[in-house]
Image 1 (cartoon, rainbow over the protein chains, first blue to last red):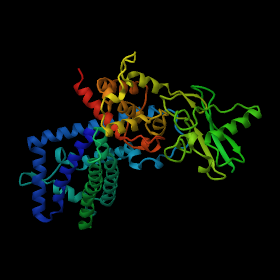
Image 2: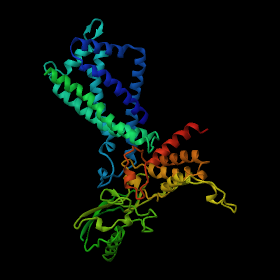
Image 3: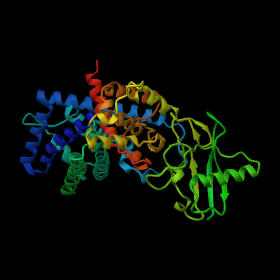
Amino acid sequence: MALTGLFLCLFLVGHLLGNLQLFVGGEEGRVAFNNYAQFMTTNPLVKVLSYLTYAGVLFHIVDGFVLTIQNRKARPVKYVVEKGNLNSSWASRNMAVLGTILLVFLVSHMQSFWYVMHFGEIEIIDGVKDLHSVTMDFFNPAINNLAAVMTGLYVFAMLSMSFHLNHGFQSAFQTMGVNHPKYTPVINFVGKAFSILIPAGFASLPIYLFIIQS
Amino acid sequence: MNITLKVWRQKGPNQVGAMETHKMTEVSGDMSFLEMMDVLNGNLIREGKEPFAFDHDCREGICGSCSMFINGEAHGPGRNVTTCQLHMRSFKDGETIHVEPWRSAAFPVIKDLSVDRSSFDRIIQAGGYVSVNTSGETIDANAIPIPKHDADQAFDAATCIGCGACVATCKNSSAMLFVSAKVSQLSLLPQGKPESKQRVIRMVDQMDLEGFGNCTNTGACEVECPKGISITNIARMNRAFLSSNLTSK
């Protein structure tokens, strides 16, 4: 969980940096974003990275399921009264639930953009697929009836990711044996910052696109 | 003070248990939780009923026998205490108190509140020892210089009394805090170094065999541990397990 989790954190950084181009408006923004999308789907080095990411996601999911099943088996009779809130954070006790929410989001998200980019019908402008318009239209209430719902769901998914990362980031280091009086406070601080800034960055995009188009 | 007790009643292993309600009157706040349970059992015996089976021994917080899950927490409310060190003044007059056994596949219930913790013994037998010659010419322990910091860390780990509160508290029934404390107390000292690689692998393998769950780093164990064992021990064991597996032949 730790290795794949941290690897996926790197993916999040890359994905967010690319997506932030959506804040650039007008024709300039469209061309820049579409060229970026073209590069991300055709460059051989990026392709290798993307296959590694698919593998990482799959392993993280399968490993998560296997461990959850093992952990449930380890306590066949549940407590009548159990007060986990007195000794641990909510996020740390609900990683599987949060992860499942993220899995549902991932499937929906890939269907909306990844599938359209790779296999769907998409307009080609100057020899480049116009993913920018697909994205803009997805969060445009005049074109997509569900734009408001989708914006809400995206923000909810990012909130779930925030809690998932809040525990997951520092937990990954503990699993790999990194616990040190000097470095652990730094890791915890970076983890907290990461778990707030990255999801907030992602969530700002649908909110921004929805507002400027409604 | 008056309290209502809801105590787990289970006739034996593999039997279905249930909570049983008992009213207690004139409970002194100065009683320990176990003394209160003694009074309850005394009442039950006088009424011709079966008393509750529960584990206890030293009643001063060092043996690790007492093992009740009280009001949703291992050893009840309060930090760094075992059940025998928990006093009734920690509860409110009129309160309902739930008393359950440790619940884990690796700690099967023997009867009522008493569970079989011999899985811990088997983990110790797998590697929780130092092979030294004890016949006659034993070297004085103080003859080997040990940095104070290492000795302190080893001692902190060695304060683990093997009560199983970490397993009982962990939402996954993981025994990582116990095993990591037992690995650390030996591996931090020069006497424990020669066997450190095989020790960590054998003890972790035995832990997995016993059916404990996996550590997800919730940190609940170190909060509920009556001896305040830190999860830095778990990180140390993870480190040792990884490097031992990578370098062992």
